[in-house]
Structure formats: structure tokens, C-alpha cells
Image (tube, rainbow over all chains, first blue to last red; front, side, top):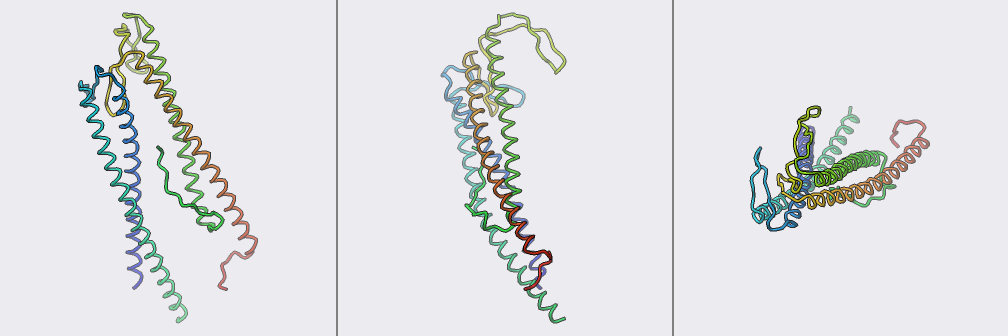
Length: 123
Length: 159
């Protein structure tokens, strides 16, 4: 009776923990992307107007207009920062769910132990 | 810049041995990871400063000076210095900028300084984690000893 319920609750909890881990990994990747992009943005802003900027697309280096490059990098930074906010919000939501689930698991475990105790006493 | 896991201020004296052990392993992992970061940053800083020197050397050389260019780790070809004024610098995320020798050397030096600062930050964090790890380990050992001395028969009895 409590057994399949408990098993299911444990399953759900484990799934939530895996999601949390995957989310944390994504967060790490985003952090490093933000850092790199911020550095590129700063370097581009330091350049003189007549500097020559290239972007590597596959095996080719394509000349880019400085202002265009600055705009693109700024936009990319904003995009990644948006992704970061999403990931952080997801983390908060998942953590809350996981806590709830953990409480449920412990409740069911306690119930099962109680029932096993009464069953043993009756035997 | 490094991702800090959220930590609640918990008095470790109130934690049980199992929780302390979990905390201890977590801290141990963090110390290892920080040591790795520290080493990586050191390597990168070294590369940056070598790059600065290399660029300066290039700037001091003469046009058409004979050079050996590496094709592989053991294969070189003869070449001539084409340009002693401008170099192509990789500034990240697939962006390259043509810069003068001075600007390129300056970029490398700034990058070196930045990496060294990051490295110092990591070192401080690692030291703090190590201190915390030592504290947790001490408290854990105390608790284990206390448990062992108060329960000579290790079975948990129903009281």
C-alpha cells in the first residue's frame, strides 16, 4: 500500500535532483560564456574607429565593421544574460519542488516503518 | 566570477555525524576544484606573458628576416618575417583584431594581469574552504569519538 507510493515518490525526487544537476551544469556554461563575451565587448570598445576586426566563421575569417561587431557582441551578451536569469529562476523552482518531494518521501518512509512495526508486533 | 553555491550559516556543532560527513566531502571536492582552477589560471597567465614577449620580439626583428615556422611539433619550414608592425590577435568568441605590436603586447600584458588577479582570488577562496574543511573534520572526529566512548556496545538499542 505505502510501498508503491513510496517508490514513486522516491523516483520523482531522484528525477528532480537530476534536473537540478543538469540545470547547474547549464548555469556553469552560461557563466563562462558571459565572462568571455564581456571581455570581448570590453576589448572591442577599446579599439580605435579604424581598427580591423575579423570574425571567424568556420575556417574563414570574415572582415567585420567595428560598430557592427560591437552591436552583435552586446546583443549576444544580453541574450546570454536573459538565459542566465531563466536558469536561475528554474533553479529556485526546482529546489522548492525537491524540498517538497523530499518531505513527502520522509513522511511516507515514516508511515511505512510504523506499519512494518505494527505488523511485526502482531505477528 | 566563480560560482558560489548557496550556503546557509549553520553552526556545525549542531549537525550530526552523517551530515558532517556529507559537508566534509562537499568541502573537499570544492578545495580540489579550486586547486584545479588555480593551476589552470597559472598556466594561462604564463601563456599570456609568453605571448607578450613573443610579440615584442617580433617587433624588434627586421622585415624579411629568416625564421623557422612550426608546422608540427617536430616539423619546421623556412620563412621570412613579412610584417613587423601588425599582428592578428584572438580576443575571444571567434573575434580577431589586427593590432600594432604595441597594442598587441599591451593586450597580452593586460590579460596576464587579469589572469593573475583571478588566480589570487581563487587561492583565497581555496584557503577559506580548506579552513572550513579542517573545522568540519575536527568536529566530526570529536563527535565520532564521543559516540564511541558512550556506546561500548555499538548496537542501537531500543530505550
